[in-house]
Image (cartoon, rainbow, N blue to C red):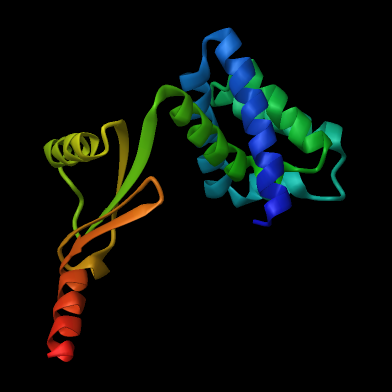
Length: 182
């Protein structure tokens, strides 16, 4: 996504956050945005319909309202979708969701962290890792865990723009570099 689209997504996200905070539903809107992005990613026909140039904006808005209302979307999300459809900017929704999550976390003093492991982390492992990251960073941590068999073992964490790589692959690479120096 280009810089111009990222800027637009941040502006939408900031405005959404203000509205959601005024209504007391900032956390709920974050979940709703995530669900909306997931729904569009899973249903390519819906995404195609909402971005199709031959379909009138009013028809797209009616489709979006019907589908997302069935999913339990609140009025704030429905108004956002109406606005994005009217302006031909539905493709910004994933970037808006990310920008909203970042702005909401910043407001609450929470840092996002992503852990990459070879096998899925059990809930107690996720809790311990999250607690360790919180202790190391001095902030609350919101951890998401993903699985990548290429990791081999260990964990790679991306948090606050920094990478902490404790994977077997990283250790082997470090060992190889060390041995090549000698």
